[in-house]
Image (cartoon, rainbow, N blue to C red; front, top):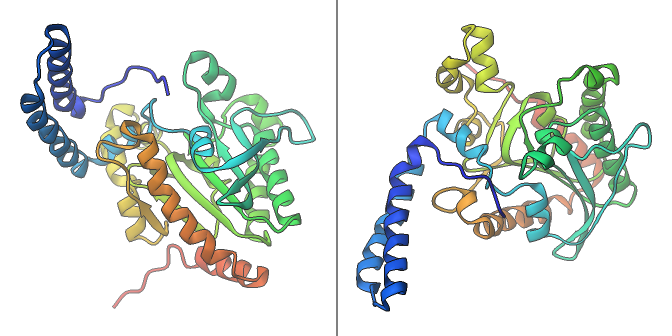
Length: 321
């Protein structure tokens, strides 16, 4: 994946060590030298440094990783994990929304419908896909595909990666809130298994519209919240510069959400984040996805719906001694 050059402040020590290793490799190639003994300790140090830095990320640093432009997007995971993918377009009401991709595929031979939010890799594609922020027709397309899956008794796998629903006037005029609400209502009663994976940024109702699922999985450095840290800071403190404080308050990390029973499993990422090793990230996701799917496809529709309802009814319930 050819992403945009990007380096977060906390990654600078990693970048500096990577540059040293790259310099040694170039030197060795130019002068026909064997520098294996010099490079191996540096590579071991680099691996330890990545693990140490990424084990201590703050919430706002997690947001930076979740937004990394080289991070695998929905189409990347579809390519790496699924076969025979046939993309289906349009909501049959207005138009196709490129911010949502979806269609039929096979997952380990099992027919499934996969739906995901897709960001762009460059300025042109981001304008086409609106940075993964869907219009109402995108959510209606996703729901159309889910009903198709239900009709053929196929599981639904949704991949969430968006800052939120598109906030423009046209989207509001065409019923943005209504489209999201309808997704939530109908996903709650869908008579087929639904698995959601938060692969990057899960923002607001735009993310939730694809995430009312039997199992909600979350990559280790993904984030999931009702609003972005910048938006929260602008509302509460009238200044987006307080985004770090907002990120702490929102509890948007996978680890915090798992503690609150809002997500069902945290999926490990390669050292240094999914953007450093997309294939490794896909392999970790594959293990979790297959396990949960195998459990869910054994359940009858009535049981699925009942368990799904109980899962969401129990969210936010606390007992005091």
